[in-house]
Image 1: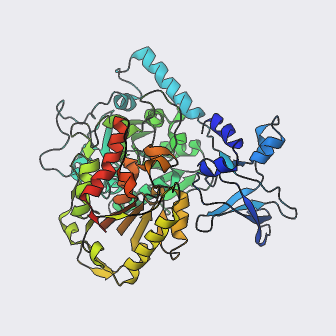
Image 2: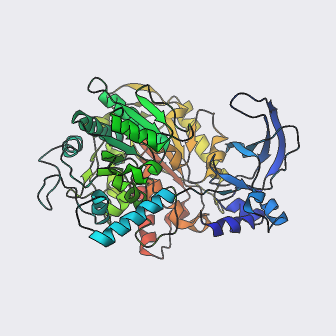
Image 3: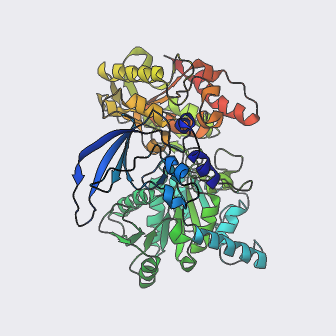
Amino acid sequence: MAYWEFFHRLGLDDTDLAADKGALGPLVVIGPIGEPWKPTARSKPRQTWRYGFAPQDYDIGSRSRLHDPKLHRQHPDEPWKTWQVKGALHAIDDRESTVDLNWPPNTEPPHPEALVPLDTFNDREQRAALLALGEWVAAHGIDADGPWRAGRDLLLRRPPRCGQDDGSPLRIGGESGLDAAVRLVLTIRDSTLAIQGPPGSGKTYTGARMVVRLLQAGKKVGISATSHKVITNFLEEVLAAADGIIEVRATQKVSDGSARAVSEQVTHVASNAEVQDGLASGEFSVVAGTVWLWAAEKSQEMVDVLFVDEAGQISLANVLAMARSARSIVLLGDPQQLDQPLQGSHPPGADRSALAHLLGEHDAMPDHLGLFLEHTWRLHPDVTVFTSEAFYEGRLESRDDLVNQRLHGPEPMRGAGLRLVSADHVGADSTSPEEAHQVAAFVRALVESGSTWTDRHGDRRPLRYDDVLIVAPYNAQVGAIAALLPVNARVGTVDKFQGQEAPVSIYSMTSSSPMDAPRGMDFLYSRNRLNVATSRARCVAVVVAEPALLRVRARTPEQMRLANALCQFAEMANPV
């Protein structure tokens, strides 16, 4: 977050606070909930108070430092810490539009009128690494042998050095993406191999088997990603792939217990020194951690190959900062799905993710530049045809057995493919009660009518509420829909559901028109969000939208491109 945004939000009135995603409020005190928590060996005593708020979109994490605009008005000249809310975020309930804060016990808390987060991170290691890279290039040239070669090749958008002829495809003959990846990872030399994995294509499955092949060859492997959770999931896949083949001696660097334990084969450590000592002694052959581990000066050439998962969400700058830690880099991800979760102010070109930088103007990875995993294990062919044409230059295909996936239910939804449901409302922005009720009624009718579905193996079973994945662009609409459905219904934003799947996906677009969209056309019509929302579906992908959203007055070529994806869906879908 830019500091000017933080100060701007502290000065907003109630109406603007509710409309700004970067704040939560105004808040209304509901009262204390439950009994005060008694102290234990691991926690302090506390009391929990609940506050209500109007349905709205927000972006507040469990570790955000929260500030109260009221304290800012009362103490404008005091240090920022004076404005900080002394209570800790306990929970936010979108269904009920409530937020719970934990406070010290025995006294009436200083209730905040709103919550304005300020999220900052210590990027000292990354900045130092990038400065060192710049100084090295200034002294030796960008194309000289030496450290950061993989990062410098990435910066120059060069194909990996895997022994192929210049300009030749990386695959041999009819080789599958998986077979090519496992072969190439042993031939890569001081460069970057990029692998684009569209929805359901087995990106993590492929990456894990590449890691196992390297371990069999006696190599040391690093793993990084956007979060400890993603890293943990990748480690689990590596352990599964290695089972019965080779012992995995792995460590994951975590600083605060934020990552859950994978198995006894993965040791959690808290410092870079423990990682370095473990590698030097041979105790570990796989090391996992976020950018703060790999950008450190003492991590230089610590491993042979560094795998960067979700590289479509990691900035080019962060990958370059990590580049000196390994001789070669493997990028796994898909910039056509979710983009970087954190945005800043950057010079042109530097604001892109590592994979988006490499792809340039392409939607799918060129054959000479990296690997494109062209087969999805998730999407019925009638869904794949839209996903492929709209987002992947027509190169994505379904496995043959996915044609078996079908929904058996009311006539408009029977079968497989795309469906378009028209909503009818005016003036809706981040929430539409009319559309929320329409979606909830649609889901209830689908599930409670006795619908069934058939998977790719031909097995048929009843359709349950958790077989329908409901996506909305705004938290306020998520809460409105969730409040109308059973608790086991799966409702959330695209960020929550990336990597997940269900027989049916429903995308509630919420806003009544492009002009009503709170964060503008770029957000509501995001190709990434539409791709993720519709590609969760194994059988049927549904978009619910006010017809006015299809009547767009685009003013720029980019707005035309954004609108085209939704219009293409509407053109290919069956109306309901």
